[in-house]
Image (tube, rainbow, N blue to C red; front, side, top):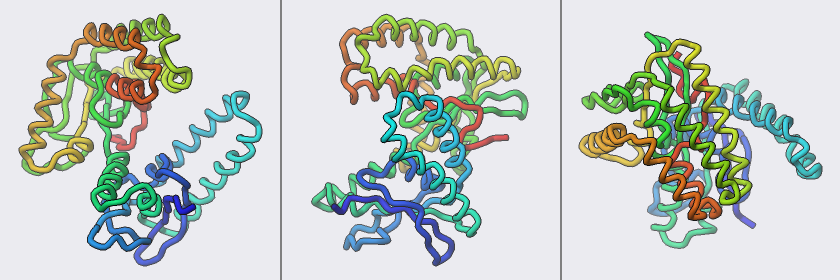
Length: 330
């Protein structure tokens, strides 16, 4: 069946393969491609009047290498929870990815091309459906809010979050918050875009402790595979708080502009979205969220996979908590 996403490295007019993936464009393909991504015409298929279909990004392998290293460590730590025949199938992939990164780095390749159109054509019909699917894939690549701790001119990562700025990001940032220029993107004449707040972890710690207690009390109302995914986040958040507290960090910076630029067009729309986020910071209420979480758990919504993920993304438990984020401010 013709149902693949293709990934290539490029330098000038020279190309070499990175990999091909059956079914949807997987996370690894997105991770290779998502830096400074632009939509371009398909490099493999003629879509007629449709001038987008593939994606071209700047080749930046550091984050891929870091992710694969940590992923391998997780698989090694939980080997007893993996069917032996599954492990035999996937274990060589780790070496394959590392060898691929070494090869394209040594070859001086500068960009990555991802073309998912073979699969897009299989699941769509009209031009409108093709464009909707291309837009969906694009939204999966550049759509994050970034959170950093700061002391003087020193920064360290707290976490990054896909989709909207979730409640946990707001809770870290909402004390004595001021709007500042984006720390990651040049918005020209727009002098707001990010937010700086005083670091006050007591309220975050209290919220996360009570949140964990709610999840423990209603474990039977959570899909087991959902719980396995999010349970480590509680320890990650606690470790993050301990790290930035011990490090003497005094402020928090939240920059949602990557996502803002994805969903807006004009300067006016950007400012409206920034104002909306600022109002959410003003209204940040952990007690409301604890009540909302308890109601959601009691309703059984977290027994439905789709509903569960949307709720957890809105809450922030699907975030990536780490001192090293994609944009390193050191």
